Length: 122
Image 1: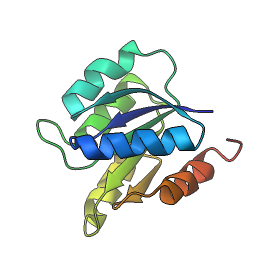
Image 2: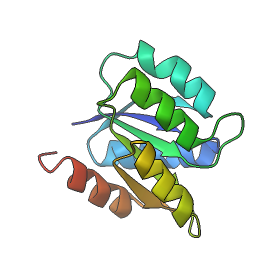
Image 3: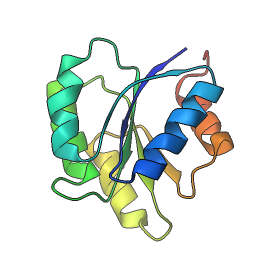
Image 4: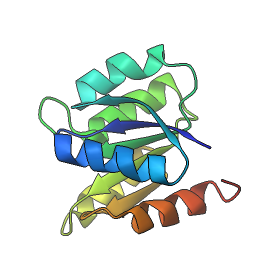
């Protein structure tokens, strides 16, 4: 079982991801609606195994937030959530330290597949 933290400006995406993680046997231990909120909240939570990070958000995008989170915690495991046509941003996110990405529309199956690649024992 993994402890997940969700960062996305869309409430519907946060709710869907929470449902998917729960269905897969994992726990969502926090969420944020933008990068600024994420970098404020994440250091206050003890055990986060996985962070899902939307690429495009107001105030601070996912790439900048990923860079800052990796500065604070180099071991943070971040999966980017992105739309089709954002391949350049995905490459930038991976360079910033993200482990992988999931293309929208997100499905439980896509999320499970990505988690299994990163955490084969979960």
